[in-house]
Length: 94
Image (tube, rainbow, N blue to C red; front, side, top):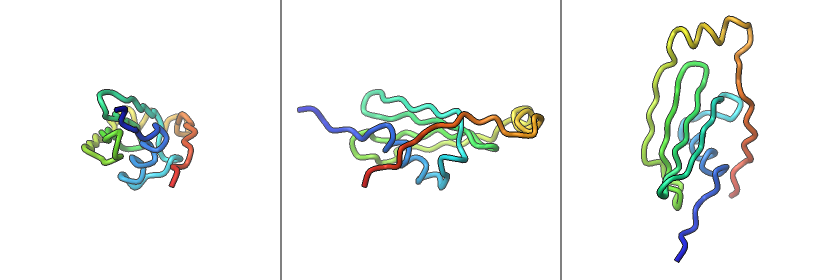
């Protein structure tokens, strides 16, 4: 029997909800599925995030944050604009 999994867009929406962030605040987004877990990584202007979500239930199984290094923060400010990769994240289905 094939177990249903949530979509990558739904997984990303759940990760953003868990962290209290919205899609305009994140960049360098990575979302991969392996062995029934989504590995989701992204950055904000100050922190790097990594979350593990159960692909069947959407439950967040792990969350880790790490501050951006001073050089990374300074580099993002040096141009006057934060260099962000715009990611189109479709709103999660109800």
